[in-house]
Image 1 (spheres, each protein chain N blue to C red):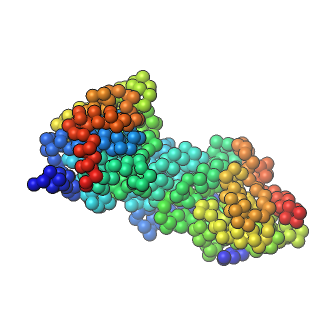
Image 2 (cartoon, rainbow over the protein chains, first blue to last red):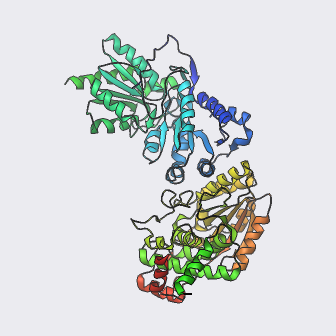
Image 3 (tube, rainbow over the protein chains, first blue to last red):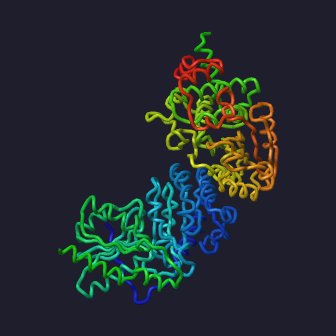
Length: 324
Length: 303
């Protein structure tokens, strides 16, 4: 188990996760002629524009047709290409779900799916565009793999790792600028969680932007002499079972945090491991079975209970149960 | 020469690598064998589709034994043409064509849809060598073929891509997304074939959800549209040749066919879309095809 030991700076640099995706695609394109990028009329907002400018011959505009785009990517993969197709997560995971299941996953094709604009922090576009079902849908499909990176650098590394992994991989990004908590040097291994901060009273397991909130929550808990371990579980499938079991055993309580529906998401995935191995009390910080709405990202994160203070409250609840 | 030996060499003649370009008489004979295979395997499995496989039998035979440049012994042969049945439920004809062409032994047909066989109810790349992309949910295959065609263009590869679709399948929206894409990128290495048998599970296509005028629809999507009698070998070969020669547009062959073609009591009856003949019905069908279950199942099991 590696311990990255992330220290939160006074003022973190703010950057979009999907920019890490866009930059990584260009670097991948330089290294590997098999890399092909497809987009469904969202070139700028999925940041595949960098790749499109650099490699126009390996860039395919599909128009507004996500199901077709998924099938085309499958055909390219069947011929040995490594296609990445990019759209919003709502469309990638829901609209193309059948195409992902039957054509891509059942065949186990080397297709990479980039879902941008995941989570409530998508903001003003409202519920239709705030993808919050991606983890539950994708992880229930055999052969699928999924990474939910936490910041710019992790997204860069996740994109490289997705290309190197043979098989279908879904990448989930947010829309907003989020604090950069990792560096170019922070370890990243596909399929392995990272302990970002040590602790002994409980473990906070988070993915995506909630990793930052978890690190903030840890600071607050420390003021009450509560020692929280923070795990960045970027790969939600395949799940790092060994790390989850170890955290359950060593800290005796777990809080999960995700910008996603509570049904079948990260918390659900971690629970499945915990109840079958080292049963310990758990609390799940997530969106509780409701659609999003329009608003500013920050006020929505507050209203939907996805802040450090919500993780702190969940930690206090889980510790009460642990002691009971 | 013993009958078995004659049969073995006759079977092996269909296994050669490359484009076979068989003459019409040989294709007609093979199509009859394909129909016998279909009925025999369905009689054995007692599960699966009858109508569509029989309507695809003639153009399917032309595709596999005349048109396609493939090496069944080496399904991933880099030079190969690409074929894909978007209508995954017609596995009885897909597997019969594959087995007769040499992808796997004929005896495997006798384990169609069986737990201990590889021949899944719908084509599975995971289970059957030669199936490149799994299928079963309608409407998805033409998109896959567009991707294969784009890859060929990027690699400046001469491969041709053939996608078999159903007429009922034309009701799926994704077909038209893919149709728009192929025409936009002028994928003239792509050839669609529609098994236009005018029937689907619930009845006549036109009663269920009309697709007419299908030729005009494809033409208006900027495809080269070719009509042919899907049971006339000469007409089918002419259509394939036209598609091959056409530049600047993808081609689609509307193969006018009859569901259940070749079996008197199945022909043109939608009730035979999704069910197999019972053993006594199969025996009658095989008699119409000039053989018997005992004779034809023995041929399959021997190779």
